Amino acid sequence: MKNYNKSSTMLHALNLMRENRKLRAELKEHRYYLEKNVACRTEHLSRHIVLLESCNQTLCGKLAMLKKGLAAAPVAVKKPVDSTVKLYLLNSARVA
Image 1: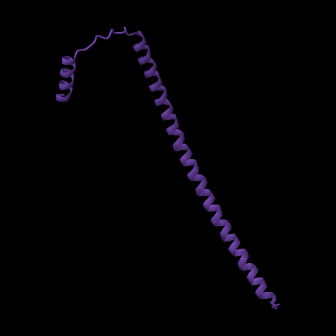
Image 2: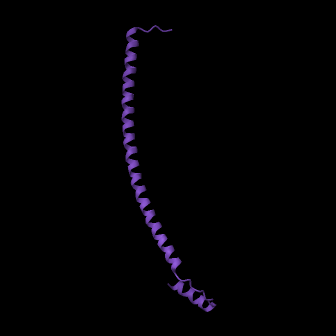
Image 3: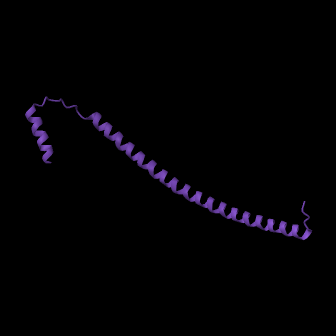
């Protein structure tokens, strides 16, 4: 077992304490910036959630109005379409 003198042991302990303080300060700084970053992202996401919810409400309202309009519209009676009309419709769709 090595024999350490008191001054080298004390110097080593002081160096360890200095390094410990330095690491604690770095950790405190990282924690501060992490909390700041999380708060900023949370605020950003909250604003997006509010925007998306309002868009969803608007779209749901429009969909409900369309459903009411379709329910109130008279039902058209489908007439059979002969093959010449089908060809005309296909050709006119290709031109347009």
